[in-house]
Every structure is written in structure tokens, then in C-alpha cells.
Length: 241
Image (cartoon, rainbow, N blue to C red; front, side, top):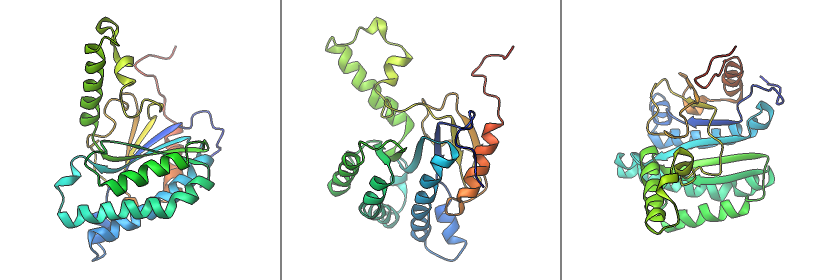
């Protein structure tokens, strides 16, 4: 299924909570990490579909600040998967015009993974066809707390007048300060919750909760969701005359 990339109602920025990898694997009698590997392969198809669907910015939720609560085996497997994904996909992302950014608190991640993240960001920093943001060790509340701390430090240092602080001021301290707010947030796997993802940025986003597990989230499924979004009437709290 294709969508006119020039459609005026297409979302500029789509954010996805990639849920269901573990359940998808278990339903097939496989370990949860089997599903995570299948989900990682699905990312490429979705990124490649973005230009044809009119999507300029794609943000994906890869690992939350709460995911550390999972078993040590699963967490270690995910960290290995992230390192492998970056190493394997770096050149293709560069050649396909994808600019990659990471958001989240990197401090808890191992140094090798942090270095690979830095290298991928530098390798793709001049690309502009698709902007892929990967949320890794990310939580919306944690992001706002870290942003508030940095803002408070600048106020204490006399670099910011507290009387001028407003929502736009705080937004400049968020991990996503160089990105537009998401127009559409998709969650796969049938769960209907936002799980601490882009809390500030998604204040006026449209949401779509679908039953499809992430490893089954194909280009056609993506296109259908985008087509449905294009029919929505976004008023941002106002009323059309």
C-alpha cells in the first residue's frame, strides 16, 4: 500500500512504541530474545517506508528506564542486540540518507555501546532524508527531571532569568529539543497505554493503538495507519469555523 508522499495531511513526525516482541516469540515457542531480533529486522523496513509515506521524522522506543527490571539474561541480550544492530546497519543508514539520533540517559549504558551510538550519530549527521531517533534507556519522566535540573542550574548560574521561564524554555532542555513534536504515536501489540514515552512532546499527538505485534508491523500496516491519520481532524483545542 502506498501513500502520496506529498499528501498535506501526512504526519511529519511519527513515534512508535515497538511492543510485543517477547509475546510474539513465546507464541511460537521461542525465547523472548528471538522476538527482539525479529523486531530489530523490522525497523529497517519501517525506516525505508517513511519517505513514500510523507514521514520525515521517526522516533522508536527501543529500551525504557523501566526495562532494567527484566531478567538479567534478557537485558544482556538486548544490549548485545543494540551493539550488533548499530555495527551492522551503520553503513546502510548512512547511504540511505538516514540521520540517527539517540535520546535517553546514556550514563548507565556500557562504554562500548555509548561509543557506537556516538559514532553513528557522527557518521550520519549530514543526512536529511529521514531523521531516525532511537529512545534508549529513555523515560519521559526521567527526561523532564533531567531537563529541569539543567534549567535550574542555568538559573542558579544567572544564565536564565527565572521570570522568563515557560513551556518553550523547558522544551529547549529536553533530549528532543532539535525535533518537532510527534504528530502521531503508534503502539503495537494491543496494549493501550503510553508507558512513559515522550510525555511532554505528545501533548497534542494523535494516538493509534493496534493489535499487530511489532515483528509483524509491515510496510502495509504502517501505510494503513498513516492513511487513517490523514483522515483525522486536528484542532489543537480550537474549533474550526
